[in-house]
Length: 216
Image (cartoon, rainbow, N blue to C red; front, side):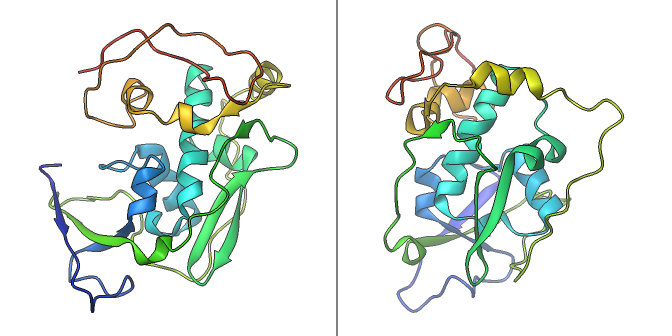
């Protein structure tokens, strides 16, 4: 966090009017797994769909992070082509969007049903890295871009991944615990990792994996 400056808010300040050089994020996004610097796959996805990461509803983060933990475990590359095959992005309200399963791929459970008042709990943050600091567009937009990316020359095979998770149900809050985020390099806190890697039984209350290494 040495590269970031966070501003505590005055009661009169508004989310859509951050100070020059700062951007607005929400506390519930942090609670749902967002960390800084923003993971590359989130920045790449937002760059492709042409919206700011701060425009994503909190549940988008717990869903995306749970989803990419599964993809990472199965060694599927975290690129927009893969994500856009398996997720959908919908409008939640003015300049707000959410990400969820596409079609019948409903293997992630346990997301909070709502985040009452989440838009009132925001903060401003600035990145001091001068060159391409956020690696995506940070201006708020009214619309997003949803066309499927061009198929890569070596397109990842998603069939085996979907077969591996078919019939299973994964508990999202378990998969965004700090040790797992650290293990998959979505957090840089260096938290000690507990347990053994392994696929859980199809039980919505069971964690997917418990890494057994420490990532400093």
